Length: 348
Image: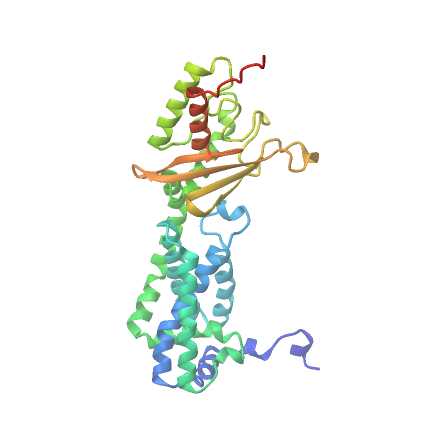
């Protein structure tokens, strides 16, 4: 048995870049197939990174800018390109860096990144297989999956020397932009609400901040029509309810869905999970007594927010922490006290 077999080293690990390109070219000779690959291979590369970017990850991903499954997988792939040579490595750093920055930008402007990526991925692969049908040969990666990594390098020269030179020149700019975006992104995110979920998360991080314990806590922004209904509800309660518990939020913390909570409750120890549902609804799930370990789900609370865009920002137009939505509850309360049910007369 040879040494390479004993240690599990495959001969393909020793291939030079020239050998990889020569073998790849054997299944890519037809002019139409080449043209299709020049379009579809970069599209597939970007769509895979975008799909990986969209996969939820552990909590550490949210605390480290641009740390996600796309950057992790691409960093691992760069090891293969490094084995081919520094020149090819730098080319892919430039190409991958630009692709990742595009993913980040699309996500930042609020476009549905996973759906765009999925559409591009499917369309590009349809084009690839059509090209190989014209070629009359199967794709090279049917023989060796590493050809999936060779494809992007192989099409670069075909795209013209101008594209290659520009990509190489952009290495430094891409890296600087990558770092700059990573530094500025958290500040930019805190300065604006990118999505309904981010607006709710920003509020809860402030609301459950240790700095607010024992003091006044800020309220999330509500729509004008919602505030008008709250005002009307409180007016009716003050005028008609007497000693009854009346008025929205009078029987507990509307943001926690509980009458009591752990005094040192924070966003982190509550295990708060924020999810964007359909129709602009955001759900918040949290444990209001996280230190009580044997209570199961007893102290688990879920609050729902329905948000709309008003005056250039996300505002809450309705919410519920138990039972019905707040608008419905307030309307019912107003109706009850303005038109109370008649008491039945005692029987003679």
